[in-house]
Amino acid sequence: EDPGAATLPGARALGGALHTPQVWIDHQVYEDEDGRIGCTVDLVEDVFPEGFGAGFLATYRQWLDDLTEAEDRWDRPLRPVLPEPLTAARRAANAT
Image (tube, rainbow, N blue to C red; front, side, top):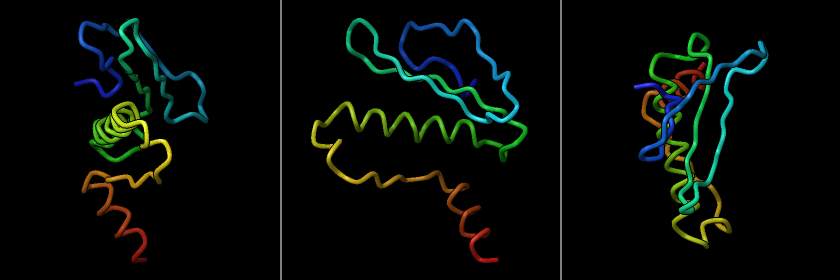
């Protein structure tokens, strides 16, 4: 599955690409006519570990869902739950 694919039912991605060498991740958040929030992510997959894109999109999507489902969420600290491969990579990097 394309990590940058549109996340709204019935939505169809028409295309997207990064053309700026210093940008590795770009994202867009949008609201449809029914008030649903969607997002797309473009990323340069070669600069990230395998599976990063799918994990990033899943985590980012969860954050957006949390923000849209509870009004008080905007006033609470963000406590990200990262996918285990990213958490393990951070632990390994910080242990050096």
